[in-house]
Length: 295
Image (tube, rainbow, N blue to C red; front, side, top):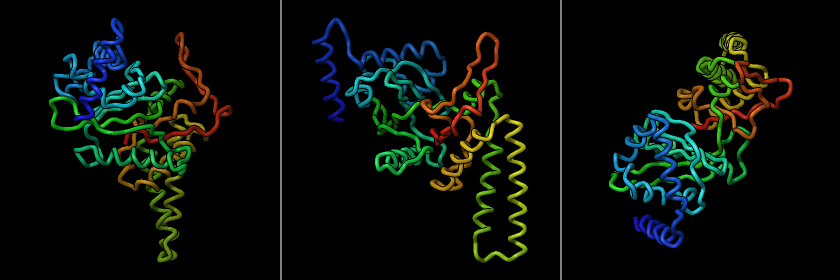
């Protein structure tokens, strides 16, 4: 709390010395208020997170002074990136996004499991243990809004194009990946059972037949969704990585809204315009880097 008010006093001094201009805290607070004027759901989410006082001049600026990306690094909020049941994400002018949330879906009302996930992803990048399925996390922490008794978690991460948006932009229906996820988990479990030394011959035959059957279901679903082989491999690699790193429990909440592609690795696509549907060429793309970005 002492650090919070030291930041705020520093902000006031900067404003006084720079008049008639104002600094990044003012610009970011104004950006959030302007985004609220454009998107009607924003105000409801911010009130859930911070109470009604987020609209009051001073309180929002004080809160934002605790976020290094917005105060010490002077990055500016430029747009709304997304909004869900438990949080909100803003785009920054440095190409990253900033997520605010207080709790999540991982069986804990405090949001702790989600922060543990982000900490794990960040450590993989820092220790050079990550791969193409690792979500780049640049910073994370918690901050207390004035007058609130619970902290808000925040995460600065790479910008991701959600799978449903990717499908729409490439001229396809925003299909659910629930079927793929469910059947791939069954395949992973069956392969683990198959590798067990305790299997009898009949059980081994049954498991192999089950894997073959599930594989056919997956291929049929990929054709129905109009996914090319490289897109499927990208999704498969990600789901397999999530399963191996975090277990079966994390697979339960995977959906087209929290699996996406890192924007810098987005395949070359023809976006919809003038009534023409978008498209993407599988021949010209590398295997897309799909990642889990919102556990």
